[in-house]
Image (cartoon, protein in one colour):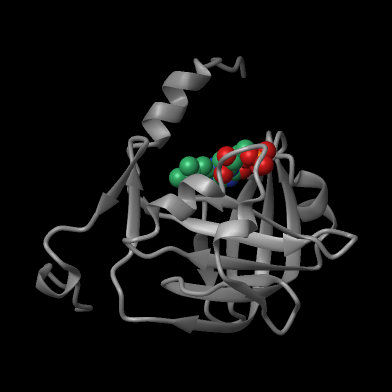
Length: 172
Ligand SMILES: Cc1cc2nc3c(=O)[nH]c(=O)nc-3n(C[C@H](O)[C@H](O)[C@H](O)COP(=O)(O)O)c2cc1C
């Protein structure tokens, strides 16, 4: 079948209409230096076993670290952490200099504070086009009762109304 080729900017814009949260994916490189980047490609995958995934761009300066990583952490940001998201998407700076962080049980850095963190052992790496999908098995996690940071159409968003006032999905 002949493939249609899409304009990358236009396709990115269409993908960007999907409202997501914002995470910082972290690991350590071969020399033990913390590495991390902002990622909204996070998805929960499975409860049993507990699996999640995140997609890392092949063009990322951190790709070698994530290709080799046996452990990584996903830190979900809260509504007050848009600056942290921008910091971990910027190049040429020490991204960890302005955030408090500590090694989780696997050694992957977790941010303190953040909305939730998941400390993972690599379950599977999947090569997928211009991204690498990292599927992690959750070894430990923690979560707090603050509001999440959202992202849609290239902008950070806060949820209105506050979550406790929003319509609730109920299983039939
Ligand atoms: C809100 C937001 C979400 C992002 N999500 C991803 C993502 O899921 N995967 C990815 O590879 N890059 C993502 N990026 C881009 C990276 O954070 C980073 O800017 C880019 O990889 C360049 O830095 P690096 O070369 O050091 O990785 C996102 C950036 C922002 C601001």
